[in-house]
Length: 75
Image 1 (spheres, one colour):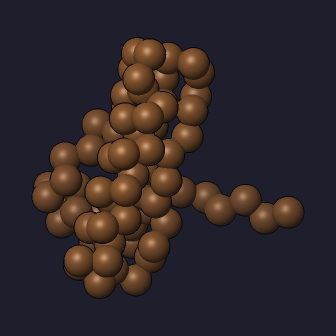
Image 2 (tube, helix red, strand yellow; image 1 turned 90 degrees about the vertical axis):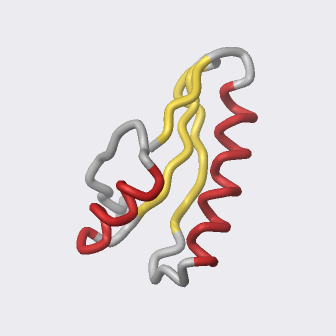
C-alpha cells in the first residue's frame, strides 16, 4: 500500500493505481487486483494485491509504504 495525504491525495492515489495496473500487465502477474481507496478527505491509498510467494520480490522492486494481509470479503 502507498499512502498519500493532503488535498490532492485522492487523485494522486488514483494515478498511482494506474501505474500499478501497468506493472501487473508488464510483469504478467497472475493476480490483477489494484486500485485506490479514500480513507478520509485528506488520506488515500493505492494498493496492489500480490501472491505471498512473490511478495518480497515485488516489495523490493516497488517499495510500498506498508503491507497488509489481503482477506477477500465474502458476501
